[in-house]
Length: 247
Image 1 (cartoon, rainbow, N blue to C red):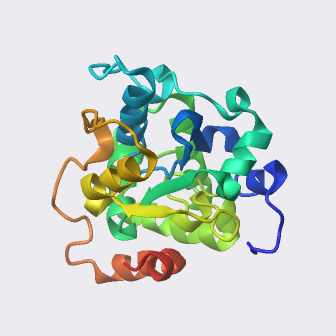
Image 2: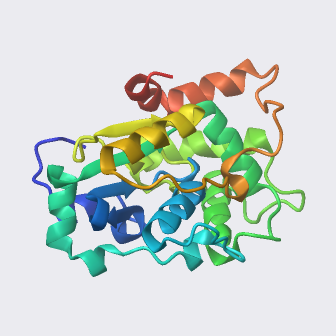
């Protein structure tokens, strides 16, 4: 990706060949800000917080999915010309990143384990991509091991990292690096303090922040413990993220 392309809807969409860019952008025009979602980096928690800010319903808690139940304005609601202006500097632009190693662990725990009991059709599509990359005909009865998951990430990144699923795609692509400039790229590891910076910059009210489900991993035990071979593979796949975001 280069920074020489003009900012346009088509240019944004080129970063998302497998889905709509509309689903990645969350404008909030009343506070002159726009949030760019980065999968597996507290998107549910951030959307819940923004929903409470936007609606004034500070006690709102989704029944099943904040992604399905939030009532935030869409790019179509706001108008694409306005959204492009916001991304071009007429609004406070922000997103969050996290340690790529921890993000891979979280993706395996939350998006790969537990199939077929959760994830719906989207979850099935994600796993089919991993199975195909590994040259398997079907998902093993015991599911994909962490070793297999990392091996699949290597293959998919070598094929075309832009087409990887957003939950394990390099974060700089999710943030459309080279096309969109940010006022703040916060860190999940510093989430509360960085969210306070967003609030201060935009004049948002201080509303309750609730960690939404998979925003934190279920276990503190590292899946890379004693596996320097897997760690090195992940460092190679996400080398650009480590470089850009200082991990």
